[in-house]
Each structure stands twice: as C-alpha cells, then as structure tokens.
Length: 451
View 1 (cartoon, rainbow, N blue to C red):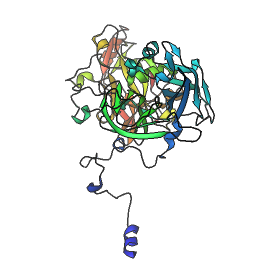
View 2: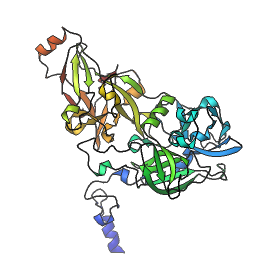
View 3: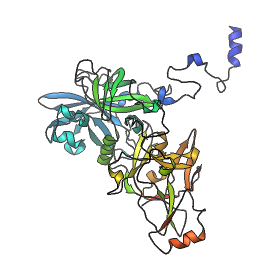
View 4: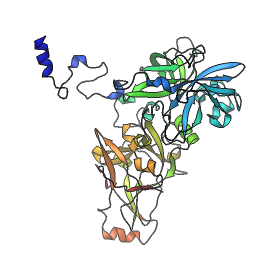
C-alpha cells in the first residue's frame, strides 16, 4: 500500500498520456482527441437535459398527448420550443385546440398555448399528412424573460447537412460519410401515461440506421404519444439536437423517423424568430478615402482552389456584388449570445448561373490566411461576431478559431500603388482586387460593418 501511495504522489496529470490500449474505439492513430467523437463531457450534468423536454396535451379528435423541447436559438426575442407539426395542426390550415404545456420545468406551472404563439412549416400546415413527414415540425414561441431566459438543447448545422460526394478536392473518404449514420442517438419524451408533475422524461438509445437530407431513421425506441420529442446526441461534449421525432417505422425492420434539423428547417425557424442578417455586403473600415469589402466569386470551381479565394475589393466606391446571409450555425446549451457560432452564406446574384447551383459557404482559414468558398459546411465556416450581437448595426470584429486559439480577420490594401488608386477615382464603378487578407491575434479593433 505504501509503495502505491509513493507512486501516486509522483503522478502528474498534466504530463500523463493514456496508453493506446485504452483509447476510445473511434480514436485513430495518434491524433488528438476530438470531443465530437466522444459524446457528453464528464463535466456536463448527466440529467440536465430533462428540464428541456416538455409534455403537451391538445384536442384533436379527443384529447391527445405529445412532446416538445427547448432549443437554444441565439439572439432570439422568444424562448423556442420545437415540436412535431401534427401536435399543433388538426387539419388543413387549422390549429389544434386547447394546446397546453404541462408543468413547464421553468415556469413551474401549465402554459396555455394560443394561436399567435404557434408557427408550423407551411408545407405541412397546408397539407398535414404523413406523406409530408419531412415537413412535420413547428414551434411554440414563449415570451422571453431577459434576466432569466431558457436556452435548452444545443444545435450544430454540421449535423444537419448530408454530405455532397465529390464537391471538394480536399476532402477525404471519411469526410464523405454522414456524421450521423451508424451513430447512437437518443430519443426523449413522455408517454401518454407519464406525468411531468411526478416523473422525468424517458430516454431511449439506438443506432441511426438511415440518413438523408430531410429525415433520420433510428432504432431508438419511441412509443405512441412521444411525437415532438428531441432526437439528440452528445457533440462537442454537450447535448445537441439533430431531429424532431414525429413517426414510427414506415415498414417492418425500418427505424423510427424524425425530421432532420437541416439548413432549411433552421432558416425557417430563424425567420419565425427574426434572427440573422440577409443580403448584406461585408465592408472593412481600413481607409477613409476608399471603400474596402470582401469579394468572392459567384461560381464555385471544383478543381481550382485559387479560383474560389476571396479578395479585398477596393473602389470609390466600386462595384459591390458580393452579398451574404449571416445565420447562426452553432450554439451550445448554456452558451450565451456572444458565444454562438455564425456562418456566412453567399447569396447568388439574380440571373447568375450560381442562382441554381448548390449553396456556397464562406470558409475562414487562419492557417493559410485565406477566405474562400466551399460547398461543404464544416467547422471552418463557423465564426464569432460578438460585437455585432451586442450592438447590431455597429462596427464589429470577425473571430475564427485556429486550433486552441482565436484569430481576428484583417484586410489591407498596401500592395496597390498610387497609379492604381488614381484610376479608381475616375470611375465610381471601377475597382482593384488584392489578396491582402490575414488572421491576427485578437485585439479591441472593430474593423467590419455590414451594408
């Protein structure tokens, strides 16, 4: 025993390395651990998700039961409860009656849900049929307490986008696989016989056996009456929702079904709650004389990385034809507005060939001092814009993650000579492009603005 104590006294947690035989089964080679492969962090309270699941009752050919769940939508003016559309819609363009949230875990009482608090996907609202299962989702919007707001499950758009094989030249075979396929998922909720006054919600677990852009199928058990509950996983160490459970298996041997929380779903939700910026150009406040903004090509070139790179466009004011929609793409359950991740989505110009092409995201790459277009959304498309959240309409910084640190985007126009600049003053539509984009350590500068 004494020898064991001596060995423990010499133990140094900071230098300790776990032997390979004890690696998690998904760990490959000597790569550093990635939280998204290991589910929930040990520091996360194991049952806090129970407070984010709510039980619903409503009248629809008699009294019915369903579920909903709080989700952390950053910068929204409401607390958001996601649920299945058929918990809210009785028939074409008509809501169910007497909808109630039973014993809301935050209000500690029942909440009566009125029509003005409800939003449902329009496709399902007009034709509420199981054939429209992928559109079977809606929300209940609750008045937010600014001092004590409800956040709920986290989300990450990376989990809502099915892979697009072959669109990038720098992708690996493993990256082409859907992140959710063959992964354990949880389904949570109350059955009709469960009482939220006395019991916590149930949780079942099973493999996600089928995925596509709009729907997930999974072997996690779900009973009738659990529709509207969250389908979720541990991602980046926290509870992250990936679908709204709404139907059982369509055929024997198949899994239960849920509407996948993809980009279309999130854009609809963000529109309902008034979140995001649309059709904006990104300007840099680097010159009192000339306009500087981020230019990106409209057409993605699959086999040419340099053709997809962003440039600083200089003019007086010059031609501005690069516009973005800026949307939340990630938020953890306890994350406040400042910590949410945002993505810049290129808005196609009217009449351009890109108007009918797949979506193009802006990728921010501190390692290469490069901003570029990509059709594959990944972690490099996620940035923070904290000052813009605090003071919309005011100048702000763009922060991108560089491994364990954060860098700030910077633009310059030092490579342009006086002759180039003189020509800009002669034609208000003329411009010069420069590749002077870099990523620097965080400062207090707020060099960007939206126009």
